[in-house]
Amino acid sequence: MPAPRPPLEEVLLVRSLATVTPADPESETKCRLAAAVDSASEEILELSHRIHDHPEVAFEEERAAGWVAEVLTRHGFSVENPAGRLATAIRAIRRGGRGRAGPRIGILAEYDALPGLGHGCGHNTMAASGVGAAIALASIADELPGEIVFFGTPAEERGSGKQIMIDDGLFEGIDAALLFHPCDRSHVQSFPLASEDVEVVFHGLQAHASADPWRGKNALDAMILLFTSVGLWRQQLRPEARVHGIIQEGGTAANIIPERTKAWFMLRSADQGYYVEMAERFREMVDAAARATDTTADVTFSGGARTMKPNPTLEARWVDNAAAYGIVDQGPDPNSGSTDMANVSWVCPTIHPELSIAPEGTPGHSIKFRDAAATPTADRTTLLAAILVAQTAWDLFAGPELLAAAWRDFRAAGDPPAATASGPQ
Ligand SMILES: [Zn+2]
Ligand SMILES: [Zn+2]
Image (cartoon, rainbow, N blue to C red; front, side):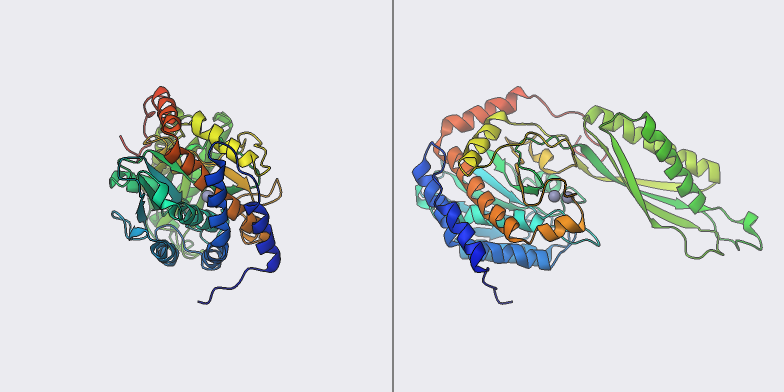
């Protein structure tokens, strides 16, 4: 597919980023990183728009992963795709010219879309900015100690691809992990909720819904009871807890007693321990609905995401680097979702900074946000994010004391909290 040239106004916006004086320390090198993003801007934005135009859902991001791998190969990375057991995962390494002794800094990128919506979370901008940051760092690879390690991480929206990559050992030896996520606000601190996907299937027995309904066992009644229980439960839940779901199979005809129904729920909480209590309670509600309707149920928990371990040292450095570009941190987002980047935060110092691509109040996971992810504003933010991720990574390569401070934060924050039902034990 031919690469469309970005319109002139986008190119001019990029030039304005390359003329900014970056934050100290190392502002001269950071300036060269910004210039490298500038030089590659056409390639970066073309990637963002191509992924936006061809959305692929969790675990099926074959084209996106292929395009990302292609660009990284072109810029001298040694690329594994697949990486570990996931066909659409990538690990791409570029060794620095100052020897292997040095940090291994991870730059992460997601590229999955939402079913029926497309890139309503804007992961196209994250993929492109991550690649852009990797390209910029590769341009000064001769000056780097250690390694740039790019991770293409599938299945963030469902399935916790990063946890699978952690389990596959791909994050072993990584000293810090960075990414950028698009948002309607700009902030570095995130407090994502512990979360899990739950599939519920009720099994009943078919019968004619008018002639002999008493011979049937109604799997839809079980599902309605479960939704009713969940609806009542919400009043008793703590304010930061969430439970929500959709019915994916509700029967096949009005004149057949449904023998099978299926739903996809998500349970979430800001408190990992409370999440575990919620999961137990939810299982009891499923059992109760099955008993009341003389049906049976299968419950499958998967894709556990944790709460996040913050890293104040890395957060402060990001805020400084962003401030040089006029970004004022708006403070933690009060509206939390969940992310498997939180699972990485228990492996090494990690940040999950977000930058605005849309007017404040634009709902995430919506058509509005999807459309915002392909505008000139999003393009400029994608390039800015590439610059800031590269600069913050450079701070870690160039400043062993910064990395040591990030690890002190990491150790001081203690051990992981209790796991999710499907997560690591
Ligand atoms: Zn997202
Ligand atoms: Zn999302």
